[in-house]
Image 1: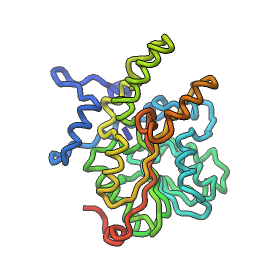
Image 2: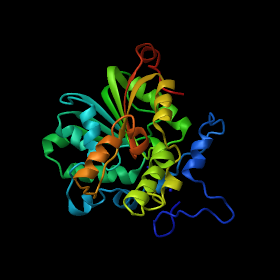
Image 3: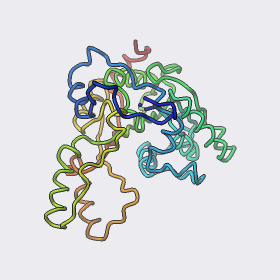
Image 4: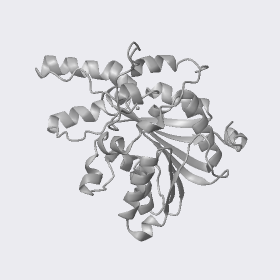
Length: 307
């Protein structure tokens, strides 16, 4: 899923002449209200094959045919516990990395995505798998706001790097649908980034300390240009917890940082261990993981499709 494209197929990040650029922080403020205007979804055309092959830190996977799952995917799978024989739903499956790795762990997996490019890439990845594992994976083109499954279908549902791409009113519908299709005792695993508290508090402190102590100037921002277009609903630890709570989930929020391509020295690793652990990690980690279960009472009340 995920901006306006020009004739070349590349994502255009410039708004039409005379229009104000909408930054992620502007979107966050707007989403503190109840979204009575219900803004339109991010256009599905933005989630092109080029987007999936060039917008991630593990973009080399398809080029090198090296399909090892990135650390955030492995971390999400570990939080789900034993998956052998379980029914798993991967909402916003993208290139299919998590769905395929869950199948390797013995799960029966359905991956859904609204992007045709994502579904095509996921099927390409399936063709590279062991046939026995691939037989336990089904990839579908579908909208998560209206899941085509009966109640009590899945033991585990994953939402990895999809939350920030959906408006608040869309997330509400998805969470209701997830609750409907989860079995009793089922678990929802969420990963979303960036953590807005990192950019508001943690990174300014980090830049200051690096300049004063290490005499090192860090980049003004770590954001990508596309964040302003693609990220319509970034979360803090508190807002993520409250959004899940409001939809009837008991949630544990875990701060996470994945240092791709960085090789810190020993003392830097020690500092990071402290800063990335709770509670400091809620301010110094770049992303968030959530482990959530529906409240028992609300689980029994939410067996009808979301309106």
